Image (cartoon, rainbow, N blue to C red; front, side):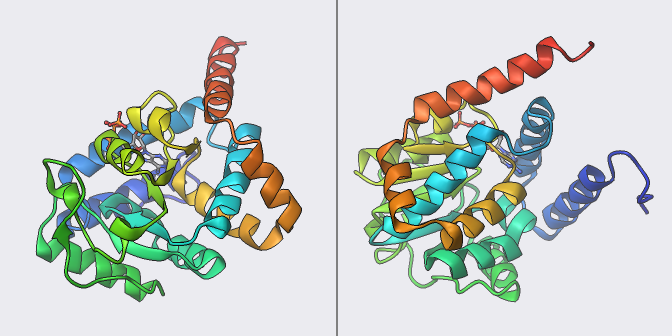
Length: 243
Ligand code: ATP
């Protein structure tokens, strides 16, 4: 039992949930270490949404609404951390939600899809094929889902698939607390924010943005600048950490 007055209460509750999901097989053991890397970077940005992340979240909303066939790709960590937030974003932008896993078994796919459905997500399932140009199981996706997408939102991505999706001509929006990762540097747009803060912010922006604001955000997208700002945020905080 974690005492609610513990200074790290939220983080401890989330860790407990991730461990429980790992025991059930929803989160891979490797996924727990990826979560730890995310926590470390979140510490560095002060566990809050920075100004540049807010711009990235609004731009992500504009891109999702402008896309012809947007797909949100879900892995075990994303489902464990944010299934209700995925449902809300899907309602706000109308995207397809599809499970795509690095450590893929039919049983894990079924478990993650069930967790998402319980949270109110309309999951795009059905026959997966090895369609993405990758030598690992992330290659498996649906022909009418991710394969046909013009834009893919990839929370907590691995760099390989992000590169493959971009090479296929798709726009990729990543949510990744690490501005130095291959994913962050390869994506069309990277939201350097914690997943459970980023998803509601994107969903809210989907309903709040005017048509002209959306156009302006898309026209002024500069991912290199946004990543640079995230790094400046972290290094400035570090420089003054002991003041
Ligand atoms: P790459 O292959 O892109 O260089 P990587 O090897 O770091 O990246 P993974 O191990 O798949 O990729 O890690 C997933 C990424 O997700 C990490 O960069 C981590 O910082 C980030 N991450 C983990 N948890 C969260 C979270 N809750 N919110 C946002 N980002 C997160």
